[in-house]
Image (cartoon, rainbow, N blue to C red; front, side, top):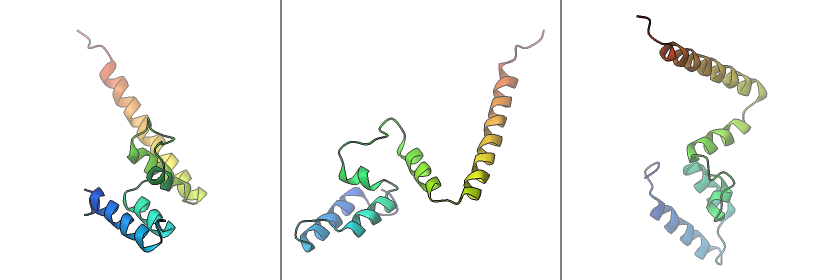
Length: 100
């Protein structure tokens, strides 16, 4: 269940919208469903995903990054770089052989 709505409820909402619009889903509803479930619209309307090998959370994060300003993306890049450096330092520290 995501955001208090399960997929069956979303399917029912989609069917109701399709019935109200002569069998064609409303674009606005599809966009809202994609946002609700943190999916791409193509994930909802297509059987195949361009990023099937990526966790859906990662795809959502990357999509969200695209709408940020350049300055905000740079800030996030610096945070990620700092976190990566910390992880690498910890890995090196724990990978060292113990001295006798």
